[in-house]
Image (cartoon, rainbow, N blue to C red; front, side, top):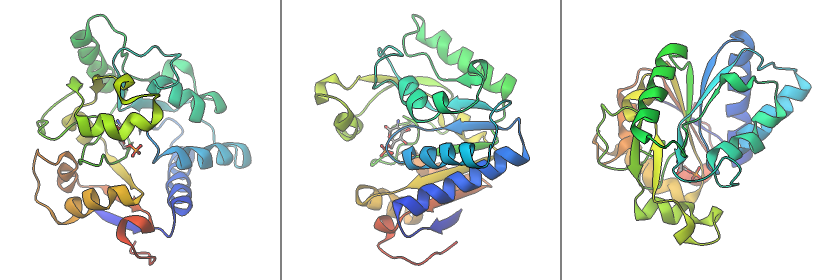
Length: 245
Ligand code: GLP
């Protein structure tokens, strides 16, 4: 795993966006795996700027999102569909048909999982997968204990994750109890993975990722087995300001 230690969240966001925009320009039909949450919002902001200034085109880009809450309508501001529209899709020239996000309102959730994997097979592999890190080491919504060979599946969210995400909702009780997520094996199928880690609340998980063992009890540890992982961390995570690169 390569670690790029940036001096601030802003620098982390710029670093990630510059890298991704460059890859999009060199491979216009790139397949991107995208994440939601607070961590990647700065990166999306810089991607929008780049789209305007450098005219990076998303006309042939395909995207797959990692996860979606079950039970929230697309128009619900807390759905990951709405998040992606707000932070990225409505501002760039991506084609609607090239955007894939699990459908959290599907009646047959198992079929939705199967169909999402089929879409990944048809349009993939993902060239670059962006990931955030959960405080308990989750990636996507793969909570501790998720099998490393898991594919897209329904997950019951842990209390820790619901509490961590409650800040986006009126009340913790409003955080959905279940979600759809790409599995660990689906994520590991990406050719390259970029993990973004920012904020003091991630310091413990980050330390565990770096120094802990590879275990299904800490989902992100699987990344140590991937041949091409870049971690971009900000200074609050390591408490230093040098660039390790
Ligand atoms: C959420 C999302 C993940 C995200 C992670 C960290 O629950 N499902 O995809 O990476 O938790 O979120 P944040 O960046 O807001 O800390």
